[in-house]
Length: 476
Image (cartoon, rainbow, N blue to C red; front, top):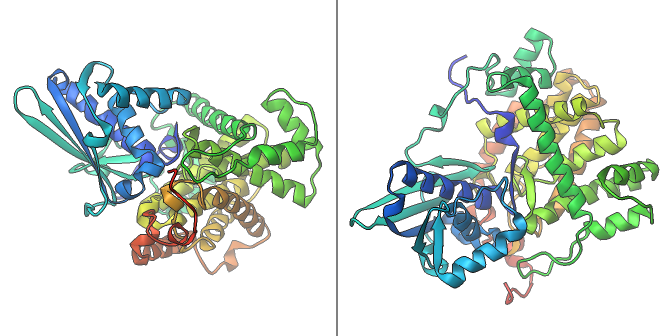
């Protein structure tokens, strides 16, 4: 096979901090890269000032997404995987109060967030709507600037950098399209997850991959459990009331539990009637995205705005589908990641490029394929499920009120999860031979739809619900 982009399961699933992978995690990583580059050039100690410019969608919805907060934490050298999310407010307040920032925790300079982070609402760079530039001035009179693009899902690309020229692994089964994936499945007789695991072996040992995936699942479980036990209102001024804790309490009906395991046991004891399961799937998805909306730790899957779909469907599989083994959970995540990477290669996973079809739609397709394989479906049924899930998200706009990942984003995760389960069931009861639409066909259609979509429906808060809901935002 000629050129192909090697994307690992750990590129598609990243541990990070909400509320947005492209507007929070990406800029955080870009700021980290910039100060690291300064240090490598041995210029960090010479810096006297840093200016940050936010363009396009990053400017228009940056405050709601905490882009400025993420940039400051990145400049400080903090890491989104390990930084204590409970310390964010204190850290940012100190920078504002003292008027200083500690670059990479090694060099302090004067810094005023209101003056040194500029939101260029009417300017956009041609390569991608999510762009930010850093300009450092040095004590010797020189200066240095770099521009980065947050291209979705926490992926960051520096201007002038060829994405395909980044560290490439020689994969035994190179894949760009779903047809490529099916080719390898047919040739080897392996399942989707088995093909993906063989590719992952090009990066690291199978043991390391499995350990990493179980760590991903651990963070997903923690975000579900935390969300189901956090009450009150989400930050940002919309006064959105958390719902998952109330729903959890109602569904548990007074059952006693002390931790995640005993909680799951209590859920299983509640039965398996349709409304009960439906309520739990919604509860799981709401929980994750309420954590995400409040600067909590979640897994980008494949984005933060869509972070609740895959955990909700996987938790459904654990509680109601017999999926509570390490092997089944690992296979679920491997299959899901490959479907996500095919969407990234053939279309986009950035709402600023493709609307919400690129986030909730892709996450729903990923979950549908994964669940189908785990429930005994064939490779073709798994990809059929992914196609069905995306087909019924085509054209979905991204129109967050006040740029916050709350309305309609949180509820959309519940819908994406339910559609994934429905798509799985449809595929399991269908014969792919008779399918009229292929996954590659729907990916191509999704990309064409994205290109045709008006920019005001691409995470700008300039259209849709963002301008039609009469909510007082004076507190924001």
